Amino acid sequence: MGHLERVVVVGASAAGVTTAETLRREGYTGRLTLVGDEKALPYDRPPLSKQVLAGTWDPSKTLLRPDSAYVESDIELKLGSAATGLDLARRTVALSSGEEIGYDALVIATGTSPRSLPFGHDLAGVHVLRTIDDALALRSDLLRSSSVVVVGAGFLGTEAAASARRLGLDVTVVDPLPLPLVRQFGDRVATAIAELHEEEGVRLLAGVGVAALHGSVAVSGVELTDGTVLPADVVLVAIGAAPATAWLDGSGVPVDDGVVCDATCRAAEGVYAAGDVARWFNPHFGGLMRVEHRMNATEQGMAVARTLLGARTPFAPVPYFWTDQFDAKIQAYGVFPAGAEMVVAHGGIAERKFVAHYLVQGRVVGVLGWNMARQLRQDRQLILPA
Ligand SMILES: Cc1cc2nc3c(=O)[nH]c(=O)nc-3n(C[C@H](O)[C@H](O)[C@H](O)COP(=O)(O)OP(=O)(O)OC[C@H]3O[C@@H](n4cnc5c(N)ncnc54)[C@H](O)[C@@H]3O)c2cc1C
Image (tube, rainbow, N blue to C red; front, side, top):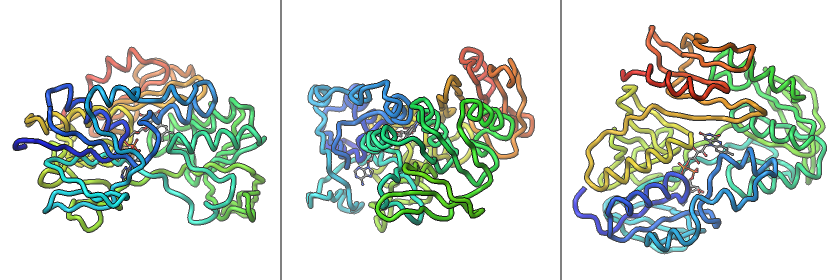
């Protein structure tokens, strides 16, 4: 990068806040603006499906930084303000307020937005879960209901199902795939997750889709593709998320399931991306990668800030993620492609304490630990560069 006088970061969450903070910490003294469409001060999302939904944390505990931190670091916060367009040639970002702001470097950190079902999303009682407002609205509905149907057995759906069980609700999870989290972890770990949920009283309806939501003003039931209708006054739709890139349409920034970047997270002249929205070339795995996990948002935000300050190091992390469900703390490093061979290397699945290795052509590409954090950290070193 040439001389920087104005950096604009769009998306005021984990990746955006880390980028801004790292820039300041590592010596950037120019103007720094953080634009975010949510009104709330930047907060952390992982607790939303866990502690916030279960009610064990006050929402204020999720704040990434206190208000004063932005003032102290001279980060200009523009909250409640969406970026609506980008002009690469003029180096300006258009905001929903009608304002246009110029930049020398722009960091795109707009994350992902939840997908919704093609029907029923305007019925009362039907929720998605991405923001703090979503979490509080869902919790308030759960507290006045006795049952909930969760559509989707991915991370979000299974975590929310566990939290709802803890609140004492009857919980049904529906997913067209045969097992929860099967695409992420493969059959054996997915079977163990299914057993854990069933033991805790979650009803899993796997291998069946949702055909319609019933109700006029409020939802009253979920119709499945096999014709069954499940009565429901709360429905959580947790069917994945899509990169929030609509505001970049027509701008010339390459978008293909995320903002496509090189190994330094650069997408176009003066434009970089970090966090859930970024699809960058990860030299460690020799391919394009987009990671929807919390640790990556921090690491990539730091990496982009350093690139802006002149570093030329490629961003080549081994991705890390975790999920907490009932008493299971599952953590993983690396990648888990379909068809990878899975070997239990330590402990046992039946004991719910193990580390598994995932191999492709004899090479370890991912390691997963279930209530076995220390061993897992050691085994992470087995994931060698491609
Ligand atoms: C409920 C929940 C639980 C999770 N649990 C875990 C977990 O246990 N472990 C784990 O590893 N990961 C977890 N994650 C994933 C993790 O939270 C994300 O990877 C992380 O939040 C990504 O950070 P980000 O800053 O890239 O994007 P986001 O957090 O999505 O932030 C993007 C921000 O940009 C804003 N924005 C979007 N478009 C615009 C625009 N045009 N103009 C201005 N602002 C805009 C958005 O409103 C949002 O505030 C969870 C996510 C959720 C939702």
